[in-house]
Amino acid sequence: MDRRRSAAVWTAINDHAHAEGTAVRLETVCLVCARTLRAQGVGMALNGRLTGYEPVCGSGAGAFRSMDLHATLGEGPGHDALAGDRPVLVDDLADDATRRRWPMFAPAAVQAGVRAIFVFPLLLGVISVGVLEISRTEPGWLTPQQVADALVFADAALLVQVQHLASPDDADEVKELRWESAERWAQVHQATGMVAIQSGTDLSAAFVRLRARAFADGRGLLEVARDVVARRLRFEPD
Image (cartoon, rainbow, N blue to C red; front, side, top):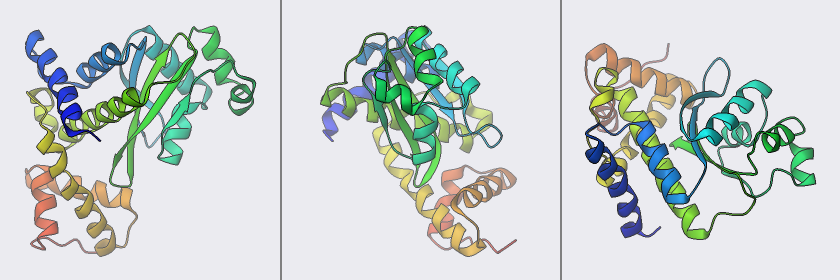
């Protein structure tokens, strides 16, 4: 991926937040993504423990229509992206093959005015945190550059969400996103894997334990992850 182009996307997100006089939020990422990719809707849903698909924010009517249908019908590209940890790109929801794949979602989305949808998973290592959904009212594919940009926006959304998990009391104080910050979160991925081995749990449970330890110690998630990677902190089996 072109690092300069990635930096340009992150700059656009930061510039919008600065112009509005606000912190960078998930809504900021969705709004700038919609403008950049000329989409009628961009939304984000988290991988919830109860429902498996929990809408959290969106920009544009198309985003809310799509997310509401996903949540109501229990099927669709968003669910498949969450389950498969991979992008699900659909150029025309009115296509016969698409209707067979999602017999409830596809016709309902078309009736609601959504014709194309592109869903990108938000992955913390191998843990599925959620998805970023980009919807359009006209059929057609994203260009290769737009797909590349969408992946950067997905990274930005993931970073905002992870920073919220790390410091929930300061969730509204993400003043600026930095490219270097995203790279440092690789330590969280590594620490999660180490905790899973040490405690004999799966990766999802390991991440929950890592986050709980950070909360209990009154420290940030990244700080605790660094201690795990440096072997200053070890987790015992339950």
